[in-house]
Every structure is written in structure tokens, then in C-alpha cells.
Amino acid sequence: MLCKRTLIPLVVAGAVLLLTGCASTTELQDRRGQAARVYVELGQHYLRRGELRHAKENLDRALEQDPDSPQVQAAQAMLQERLGRIDRADGHYRRALSLASSEDAGMLWNNYGTFLCRQGRLEEAEEAFARAARDPLYPTPEMAWTNAGICALKVPDKEKAERLFRRALKEDPQHVPALLEMLRLSAEAGHHLQVRAYFQRLREQTRPTAEMLWLCHQAELALGNRDEAGRCALGLKNDFPDSEETARLRKLENRGNR
Image 1: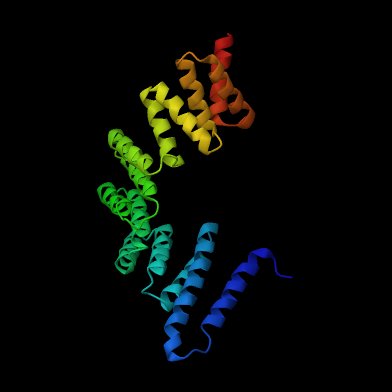
Image 2: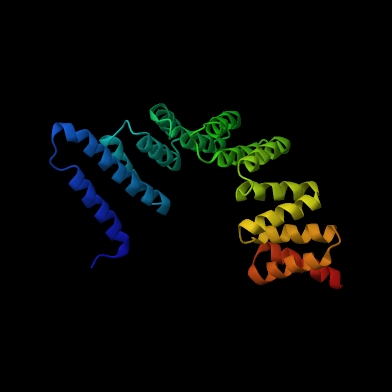
């Protein structure tokens, strides 16, 4: 009996064999496109698992089947970056963008911006994120604006980052990544009332993390609200007993008891 780990690749590989079997000339292009999509799916499966050799085998096959697919080119870009071949990754991203349909362009610009930011090409990344966010067919502009803000923090330019996070929240007031970044910036600036407001908004959307509870505790202490500070501290100790934030909290409590 095949184990689960091997079953998935074999099933997908079997689908490729069926797709690339006997076909008329008129059907061949569509069949090759379908085969490429299967190879991309399998290659991305291996990428997520960190199995780069198997990922490369399948994504190279996808490229052979359909080199004019933007999805194939984008998958190759991710692979080449993981392999440390940055120039090749850049080339595949550019090729993907040149082939992309109007429906796919926004997503690809966002992904390319993320790649550029990782390479420290911050101005180019900002332009790529802006192109994604302003694309009327891109369904999640808040994601691109948030990514642009995170990239601006690498400059570092906190004022620009804050503007970009606010722009993301204008698109989607409930966007958790932008809310979390604004919580952090507010805490760094000592804007305790804003920390309270962003913590409350985040708590409505997601389960509080150790970082969120720690920042809540610190802000409420500064505001003189010991009851709420205590609730955040209790949540931190109960839900995240082994976290760095809880260790920090216990040090503060021990210092206060001396």
C-alpha cells in the first residue's frame, strides 16, 4: 500500500500521462497547457515542502510543456529565487508579466514587488506594489499596499509606511496584516490610545497573539487602566506561557514585587 507522501505525486504524474497521451494536432496545445498546470501544481507542492530537487524536475517539465504560460514562468521565478539564482528569477518574473492577462497582472505585480523587496530593490518594489494596488482587476489592493508599507520599513521610512498601511485599511478596514503593523507603529511611537484602538479592532478579527497581548498590556499600564492591563497579562500567561513576551512580563512582575 502506498503511503500518503508518495500517493499524491504518483496520482498527479498519472494525470500528466493521460493528458499528454495520444492527441490530434488541434488538441495538442490545450493538452500541453493542462499538463503544464499539473506539473506546476506538483512543483509548488514540493517547493512548500522544501524539496527543491523534485520541485525543479516538475517545474522544468512545466516549462517544456508551456513556456508561454505566465503561471509557469511565475513558478519558475519562485524556484530560481529559492535556488539563489536571482537574475534568472528576475527574468522569469518579467517574462510572466509580459505574458499575463489583465486578470492576472495585479497578482503578478504584487508577487514581483515582494521579490524585489527581498532583494533590497526598494524603489522598484514600491512601483511594483503600486501597479498591483491600482489595477482595477486586482481583488486585494489592501495586500499590495500593506506589502509596500512593510517594504518601506526596510528603508526605514516609518512615515511612508504608516501612510501605506492607512491606505490599505482604507481599502479594507478589517485587513489584519495592516492593523497589526499599525499596532506596532503606534506602540513604538508611544501612542497608547491608538494601541488600544488597534488592539480592539484586531481582537474582533483574529485571536490575539503574544505580541498583541504584550503591547495591549504595556499601553493599558501607561494609560492607568490596570484592570485591562491585567486581563491582557492573564491572557498572555495562559495562552502563551513559553513566549518571549511572557518571560518579559514575568521579569517586570518580579521586579515590581521586590
